[in-house]
Amino acid sequence: MENDSQNCLSLCFLTGGMCTGGAERVIATLANIFARQGYHVKILCMGRGKKQVGYELDRKIEVIYIGGERGCFPVRKGRQFRRILSLLKSHRPDILISFQNYINVQAVFLGKMAGIPVIASERSFPGKNMVGAVGLNRLCKWAYSRADAVVYQTKEQMEYFGIRNKGNSYIIMNPFQIPVDEIPEYTIRDKALILGSVGRLEESKNFSMLIRLMANLKNDVPGLRLVIWGDGSQKEALIKLSEELDVRDRVEFPGVSRNILEEMKRIDIFLFASRYEGIPNALIEAMCLGIPCISTRFEGGGADLLIRDGENGLLVDTDNELKFEEDTAALISDEGLRRKFSFEAKKLRSKVEPEMIAGKWMEVILAISGKAGIDGREG
Image 1 (cartoon, one colour):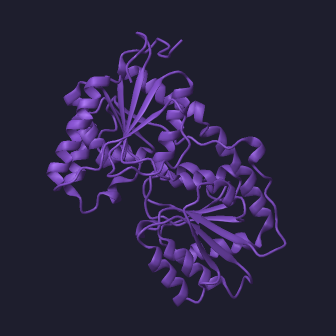
Image 2 (cartoon, one colour):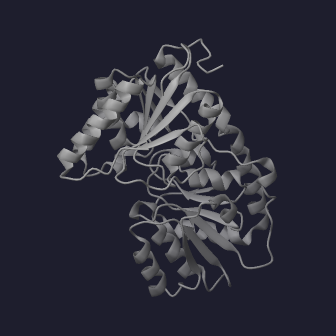
Image 3 (cartoon, one colour):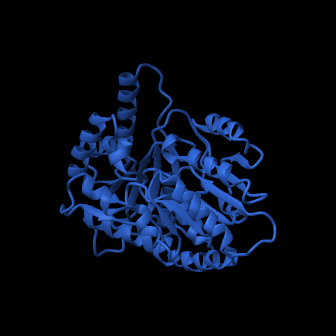
């Protein structure tokens, strides 16, 4: 992580792990771009035990796992902090970039102790994500007010912390790109339609609503199927619900896919029922692939940022199951509307192009590193 030249920026990401989550995908995308551009990049993972990296990383990027210590939480956390602090002080990165609220709090503490500027990135909607966690809520507000910069996904996230007018706050969209030759034209199939959704199988994602939707539509739409990719604590409960509603043969749970984009190409309509989010990568992916989408207006502001209701998709108030079902049935029966949404949704690609998004991040990085106005790369 040491600089080889005066102007070469050294970037360090701090995260819980590098599995197949949405925040991890954003980190991998940014890290790969920065590494290709000649910056030094390392990723520090605070999770316990070495976990599989869910996304391909440039060979120049080093991933270091800090977790694995035994003992009670205070002792384990103290050892972890000392190790990270030692790494930061010895390698002296120009910037420490953290993702996810509980990691952000720790990053600000560590950055202050090591004398390294910190960019914290909020990835969810804290108004819901922190329910019952008053201490974490207050710590985040403290940390974000003291971070050198905070990157949010939506205005609603930024306003929640009451620092809307602070000069250290930025709103940057998630990066995403599919090679043009991999984006199929939307096809109206003769065979039975497939509905699809992607996400962690947790209560907040509201997948149970989609299973109830299937139960209500099964007699009206012969052969209709629902595929839900992902894993989580609610998987067994969701399988049980599909059995109780007699749609187990109509609902698939294939688990986590390392090639989710290829998997998603076989679905006809993408359903997103979450109650709160930042900006969901799964919805961005579906739209960029040209899959007609129906989403709840989840708290956090991301849904309205991505979907213009009736133009490039459909929006339904959160937990309004009847309306969600009616809109799904209408979209199933209207081939012309599906084609329209597919065409318009793909226009989102121009707003989430990875090099452009990485450029916005680099503007923030250069500004707070004190190297604005220089190239900042090797060679």
